[in-house]
Length: 349
Image (cartoon, rainbow, N blue to C red; front, side, top):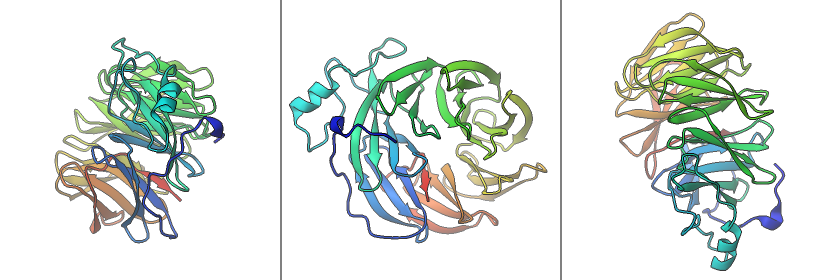
């Protein structure tokens, strides 16, 4: 990612990082105002990026060098600015944000911000104001754009990571989650308020189609080849399997209860679901439709398949912990205590 360093605020926000091998998982901790760093070889927290306010959404660049953290906090741009990095004077901070606040899509004036974090040394390089509270985030495969969903604004923000210009596109009521096609030519957004998924063309940033899925679509995952999109429908406990690029629901899997996190195995043949309401983790053989589950309590929440490890990380919506689950048996093999409820995880090799 190209970064205009002359315009950036830089301040170290982390405890020291020990040297270690394997993958890292970055996890935003909501009201704990930090992003924790987990070593997947040890299943242990090895670092913490502080002062990342009310972050639920987190995305990583393709090379693992940058994170984009969204904030659920909103502020009035006429009387407030985003939180100030400690190394920056108040005058410089106010001057920087005096003219960069976007207009809220629904006209209520409230904005939030995205924090751009460098993973090498845990420095927040910039905070970019966006319209309305941020739920989930995404970085396009070419690392040129950051995407943020705004449930209260009926759309998404698109941030140019070279110029930091912000544009907005309406997708539908209560947009929740966004994923990208592997080639970066399309972005898919789930709209929980009208039971649709939107496809945006990233060349022109226009809406190409909306398709109906189940009740209350939220988290999604796309296959590595870009041929199928899987959508968790929280209202009816189903998963919609969408054939791409046209956008046709080809199969619906019945999981049951309020479901949340979703991810695919390395080979793309197994879909993993966090069964929040029914306290279970579910595995679906997408080739044959076979569904298996294992009890997991309380309230499994965000879920991530850790590439190359045969592990799942699943957070609890009620307890401050992350379960480490074996993908084959769905057995719990470890637990990681955390500082608050854990949200959208980013795996970096």
